[in-house]
Image (cartoon, rainbow over all chains, first blue to last red; front, top):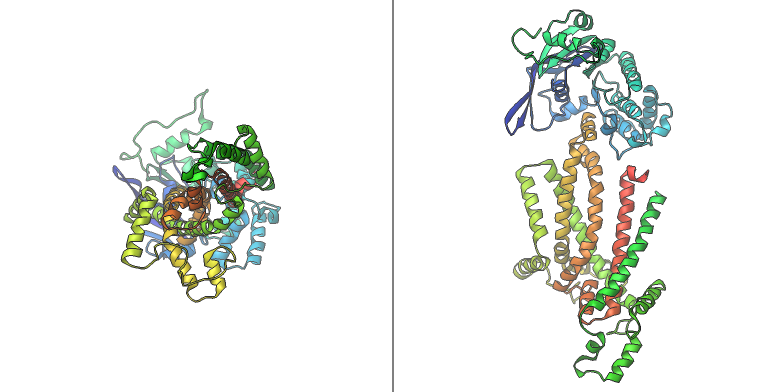
Length: 281
Length: 335
């Protein structure tokens, strides 16, 4: 049984001009210990899909799916209270802007310990001890001191580490990382990716990595889903995708990598309707 | 934090100097002669007039009068009332608890109703509940205090006989003033029914005085909550599997309260202004009514002293709010 299985997930938003379909019948599967990358340009629906899974979309969104199961449990038809026991504990998520993702009014310690107290029912002394351990596990050494720091007192990289500590507090089975390195300096990006993959291997958890960086995909993913305008264009294991891309869009995406630049011009994706017949893999 | 506090405290000095100038100039710009008003219909002889001018110091140059006044203020001397011959400060202190009590209950009413109303409105944005709450807030904000007060008196006192029309307590109860706050003194007296009577007298004036601040607080809370609910950290809180109550009531509200606290602080000035009308309508023996009477008597020391004292209190409350703002907002605290 896969850890996560989603079949024909669709998301539409109510707008003044009528419903806008952000995701159209896309299926996902992720096993324990697997790194699944979801790639695609902005607007391809990769974040929307995972926010729908987490139940984080606004009320203007309509989410439908034939199946949305986590460890065989139906997330779609589950009562909210039951779903909240899974979200934040077994399925967690980190976001693109780490500084903005942490509450500016609460200390790092409070925000990490809150997860431990909510889901594991730890007492204050135990949750504090565990929070220091968690900070150490994400590479923040002076954890006891950092617990009383506010997000604005930390760097972007440290905030993302704190977010990862928070997301891994209950040893989740699935971690979703929504462009976790996009807002960080290049030097920090590598450290954060290494940290994520190390934790993924240590905990044996599934990792869904949302990104538009094909370099990140090549380094970390086992399997890749390529999306374009709310549609899945291709799903393949990492080697097949880079060696024999099936869809025209994936080929265009790979040929647009900066390393394929000639002269002083960066390659671009041609304005083709990739959704037309035959473009999908 | 200490530097933040000292900075705020230092800013009070120029403001206070400005207030003394305005208070001093304001009463002298009013038409009417305090000595002639004091003499009444009998009038006064030119000799007596000159003598009184010298006695009150009105014959000296205006700048000298100002510096004498400021020198007195620095020594805690707010002057002596021309009409009652009593010290301004003692008259002020005798009436101040009544205004504080009224303002306190008014701001409590405005905050306790306004903040939840704003939160509900923001969470139910665009719904009938939101439109109703914001419609009521706009109505409350637009309602003239004297008209609103009279409407409530007619309905609750005149028609339903639920509340008394005026005063601070029923004549049935008599006890010595210990704190000056009728509700506290009623409790201390131990007389059965005294506290209930004090509260029933306080209800309508507090609602009338608190209506405009309530509307402002509700609208500010709604707007701050709407902004905060869209922030990334609220999404993180939801992603942690926290209940909606905790996400909205702790993670969002804590951030939304930062501008709301400032608004509540600013409402203290509005309360002081509103107290003048409310106290007049409900015959509430506070400083508002006292100052209105002093203006009509051209009692310079009382008007000046009253203005300065009220300004000091408003500034102190704002200083307290600034400190509170710093405590709530860590980014300010660590600057």
